[in-house]
Image (cartoon, rainbow, N blue to C red; front, side):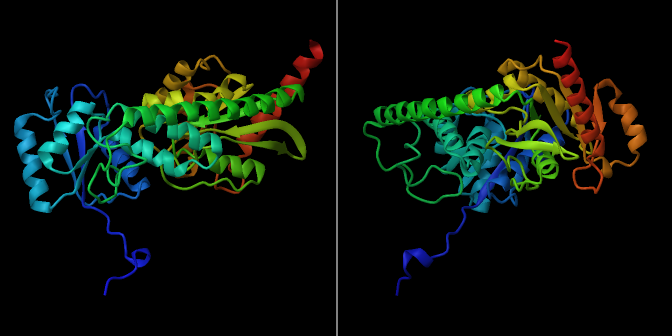
Amino acid sequence: MTKPASIIPIEQPKTLLIGIHSPFNPISDIESYYQEFKNLALSNGVSTDHFITIKLRSIDAANFLTQGKLDDVLELIKKEHIEEVIFSDALSPQQERNLSRIFQCQVFDRTDLILEIFEKGAQSAEGKTQVGLAMLQHQKSRLSGRGLYMSQQGGRIGTRGPGETQKEKETQHIEHLMLKMRRDLEKLQKVRETQRKQRISSELPLICLIGYTNAGKSTILNALTKSSVLAEDKLFATLDTTTRELFIEKRKIGLISDTVGFIQQLPHKLIEAFKSTLSELKYAHILLQVIDAADKNWQEHIQVVHDVLEELGASDKPMLYVFNKSDKLPNPEMSDFIFRNYQPHVLVSATAEHGLDPLKNFLVEWKNNISKSSVTE
């Protein structure tokens, strides 16, 4: 007897992760890049049991991989009965289509992976709309390869199925959905603008937490404001901007906002989609860039954040470098010397009992200086 569909366990497809090292991928620490790629997969619920790395001297315009590498991967796919392949780099629509045909399975790239993580993580109406719009833009560029993600039975990471089930009028359907989402987003942006004007009229300074994903921004927000914003040890645990009142020693310092984390090679579609949310940064009085001090690639992470700020037109904002997880450093005093080129900065530990005292002291002094300046003016 056939079991009801509702209680049949969903079996995850066998996935092959391919970490790419090529001359066109300017990564200083390739092992860290591979680990980050695997963490992205884990954040999306994808197993990392089958992971290989490939070093390329050149990129094939049609198939991404050179013929020898193609043959090696195809042999592995057949041997391990792989059902989907995810590349750590971005693929062109043509490369993705050709690889799917050659491998006889679904092929995804880094952009697909990050978009799906964002789709699952967005909670607010604005966040869901922003991600949905980015996904539609991405899918539109791949229409000739597989069906519309909202109507097909396959074509998603971690799914089984026959693939695309309807091809008719897909472009028109996508454009209609994108138009509706843009209109919905405009309405939500007007609400955000009204809220922003109310904050500005209240004359409360705005403090924005920014930084590389999983650096501890949400944990710091929770500790400072006694909130319960989701804070997990995984990439992109928080996507929606959260704003809270900040009190230190019963004194109102201002408003503090948490923002979506950044990552190297963040798909441009997502930067565009989240510009309305990230525009909060342009109205901030100070940015608190949270850095995982225990991560050996912290300098590269800072540069990633600076690059995104530059694109958003918010690179000229006053900034405090908040080196978090100082409790994991072997020698905090020596580390303070290492971080000397990033000024002003504080070393904190969001999980220690008094680990945020240096940050609190800085913000109290900063608030005093703002108050003095307003009186002088």
